[in-house]
Every structure is written in structure tokens, then in C-alpha cells.
Image (tube, rainbow, N blue to C red):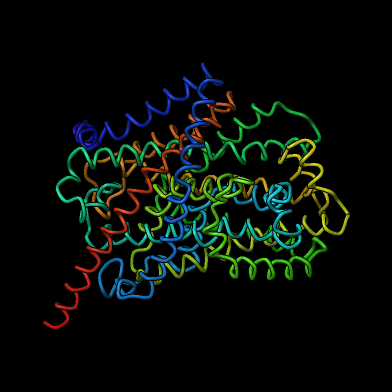
Length: 513
């Protein structure tokens, strides 16, 4: 009893409950006044994207440059832990947990369908053909900049946890070298409230993208038309049971689930590449698209469409950068926590190799398979998408062209569940850490707190399933939240550079002695 009471006193109920209540309140407003709320949010979102688009683009490019600088400089030599400490996890296990934490099942949804969305955009026709550009933008929007966000902040959080050994595992704590005592005041509280709010909003809406695909797969597998809402809720509950079970087992459970997810994921990629009938085209187009992306990276990363002829960067690049920034609340914290024993250089470069490499492979293989059918005239996926605007039916149609399509659907369904489960493991663990006033480096949150977050993180999406407009509105809220998150990210980077420089001097002085 005393232990439970003591644990309760350690919980930061303000940081835990206020963002949750705000999200719930917003959801109620969205449900009661969907049109009015949607109109207001659309205007606010347009304002941020249209007026401050350069802000998001500069942060994206800046984080990539900073990641290269940190990895190449003395900062890269800093060991996340004791100077002679060895990595806690093997490269494969570490890479698996990092990749699955950084990306949810959305990667599979977009790998299949995103090139079609670009092909349907008038801007692509202005640039050239589908063959030239449709495969370029997916790997641009999902590779270097998103992972730069994750890895720079992962280095900062890893330094905070394993070098400075702080007992406050919160977003604000990473800003202490700059903010000083203000970290413990209202400034720090606002940062933590914003972080948990963004985490909840981003988490609740990520299901809005890919979960309907899982329901569509089940209907296609059994040849029936079950109620999509019921199927989706059943999937969410199953996913919740899986990720809760593995999370409560600690990092060993998370690593086991991550490895299973990776095996399934690469199994799909290998099958489509080797048996889909488009191996040569996939490899050649993939290499060409990668070269085009690298050769045009700076123009793509700085394109603002000043005359607003297409609104392409506002609808895509700026939107994506903002969404990745919201996800930076959870994923980098988790990556930093599992990187103990690795140098900052290893963390950043290893993240690029495993994270970016795996992401690019997914888009090249799954995307180019269906693009081959499009450009050869065997199928017209673009016309189908323009006609009905249904990306889920589109993906089912793509899979049905593959050999043993039913088997692919089964593996795809299992992989998406595993992706969601592993992503939510890292998010629930991060949220649990945020809930404490103080939490030691090697201390895990109480299992009841972890269980509470596991349930909360799944209840919100289930509630939102009943009101699609609410989901879309909440997604817009999470994008808007990226604006102040961007400022916090800059503070974290500056704080890390300052404190990291001090740590380098300390270790150099220690060596001389």
C-alpha cells in the first residue's frame, strides 16, 4: 500500500492529464461542430503552411546539416555512457527497434500508394513524366530529413540520459543547458505539456491513415464486406493486447517484437522483388530515382512555389516536415534510450544506414512494382485513383496482381499489426517516462503506469473511428503543434552543442590527469 502511495506521489499528474483532457475536449468539439471546427483548423493550417513554410523547410535542411556536422566532429566521439562502455544491443536488434519505433505501419501504406498520389498531382506533369519523378518524391519525403530529425534529437536525448545521467526524463530537461533554472519553472512545464499534447495528437491520428487498409485486407481475404468500423476496432484491440504484453516484458519484449516485425517486413520486400515479375525494372528505376533525388536534393528541400502555382510544397514537403516534427517527441527519446554504449557517430550513421536504407528499399520495391504495371500499360492505377480517390481499394488492386495474392495480404496484415505494436511500445514507454517528476536512468516506469498509457493510447483512436472528421481535424492540430515544437527542437540542439562541448573538455582534461 505504501509502495503504491509513494509511486502515486512520483507521478506528474499535470503533465499526464492536462494534455489528455485537452485532446479529449478537442475531440468532443470536433464531433459536435465538425464543419465549423474543420473550417477554422483548415484556415489555421493554411496560414502556417503558407506563411511560415520557409520556417519548416529551414529546420528540415538545418537538422540534416547539423546531423552531418555532429557525426563528423568531436561530438561524434562521445560515448553514450561510460567512455569504455560497449553497446547494450547488437546492431541488428538496435537497428530493428530504432526503425520500427521511428515509423509506424504508415510506411507500408505509402510505399504501395504514394507514387500514385504524386502522379495524380498536376505539379508532377510540370516537372516531367511519371517514370522520371513519381518514384523520386516518396524517397525524398521519407528518408534523409525525417531521420535527421530523429537522429539529432536521439543524440541529444541519449547524451542527456547516459552521459549526464539525469533523473528527469522529460522533453524540457534537454533544454536545461540553455534555459537553466527556467527549466523547473513555467517555461519547462509549457514545453512538457506541449510535448505530451503533440505525442497524443500525433499518436491518435496515425491510425487514421493505415488502419482502414487493414480492414480492407480482411474483407478482401474473406471475400465479404464486413462493417469497416467494427473490423478496425477489433484490429486496434488486438494490436493493443500485443503491444501491452510485450511492453510489460520490458526492453526484451520490445526487441523481440521488433525483430519479428523486421523479418516480416523484409520478407514482403524480398517476395515482391524476386517473384513479382518486375525485378529488373524495380532495381533500375529505384537506382535512377535515388540518383535523381540526391542530385536534386537541395532544390527539392528549398522549393517554396513562391507564386503558388501548384501549392505542391505546402501540400507535401512542408506537411511532411511538420508531421515528422510532431513524431520527434517520442521516437528520438526511445532511440536515445536504446543507444547506450554507442558513440554519437555510430548512433547517427547507423541510424542513417538502417533507418534510411530500410525506408528507401520499401518505397523502391513496393512502389516500383506497381509503377511498372502503370508505365507498361498493364494497369492504370492513376486513372482509378483519380476516379474514386480510394487509396485502400487501390492497394488491394495492386496486391491482387501479385502471385499468391492472398498470402501477401496475410503477411501484410501481420506486418502492419507488428509495426503498430512496436511503434506504440516506444510511444507508451516514452509517455510513461514523461509522467514522472523524477525517474532514474536505469529505472523503468511502474507497470501500472505503462498499462495506463497502453490503454489510453488505444482508446483515443477507437473513439475517433466513429467520427472521421474528428480524426482529420486532430491530425491538423498535430501539424499546427509542430510550429512551437520546432522552436523547442532548436533549443534542444543548441543545448546539446553547448553541453556536449563542455563534456568533451571534461574528458580531455581527465585524460591529461
